[in-house]
Image (cartoon, one colour):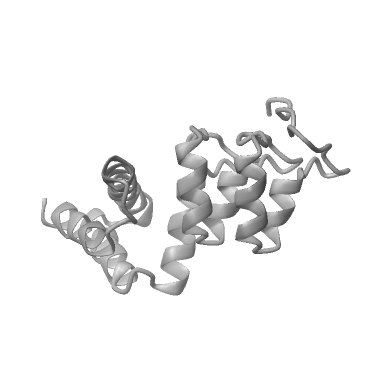
Length: 156
C-alpha cells in the first residue's frame, strides 16, 4: 500500500484517518464538504487503505462522492481487501436496494453470467457511466438511467 498523502490542514490519527475520513465515517457530510473545499487531500489512505472516496461511497453520501470526483479523487485505489470505492458503493446499493430494483437487476445479471463477479462488473460499468454523465451534465445521478443500463447489459 502506498504511503498516505498529506492531510492538508490536519494530521492523521494513529489509524492514519484524517479529519475528512472521520467526518465521513461519522456521517457528517457538511464537515466533510467543508474540509474538502478547504483543500484536504482527497486520496489519503488510512491503515486499512480506505480513501475518503471509499468511505463516502460505502455510506452512500452522494454529495460528498460528487465533490470528491469533482476534486479528481482516484476511483481505482484499492483498500487492504482489494476493494475500490465503486465496489463499496455497489455493495451498499445492493444491501439497501437503492435505487429500487438494483438487487433484482443484479440477480438477473448473475443468473445470465452464472455467477456474481461478472454481474458486479456489469453494474460497475453502469455506475461509472451514470456518474460520468452526472458530472458532465452537472446534475445528480439518474437512478432510472442507471437501472436501464443494467437492463441493457442483461439483454446482451
